[in-house]
Image 1 (cartoon, helix red, strand yellow):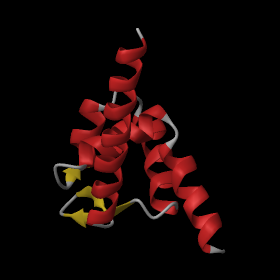
Image 2: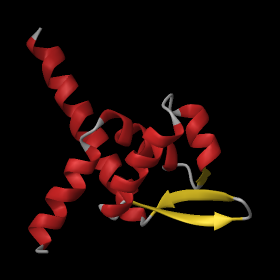
Image 3: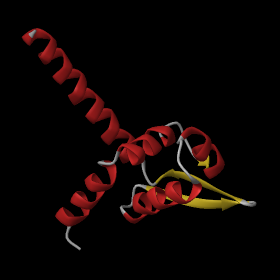
Image 4: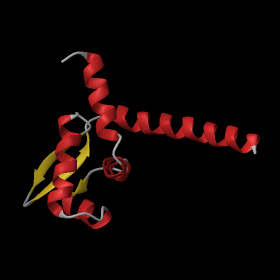
Length: 100
């Protein structure tokens, strides 16, 4: 797979509101899948599908700790990506406010 294809795969994975919410939740650090299930209001099987897509895209990883799986971001670069996106959106919102 080319670098371009991997980037597109990553952005496609992040393009779903539930997966975006999962990653935002993981920005503060690793979380047990049980905590994700409490905060992301979907069935366990639906959550598992979203986590698989994020794993396949290289965004999250799962580590088994005891009986539970704890998910975390694969790198700090993901956090930087979200910070950059927030900065872009804040600038866009300011620009839209000026237009009103």
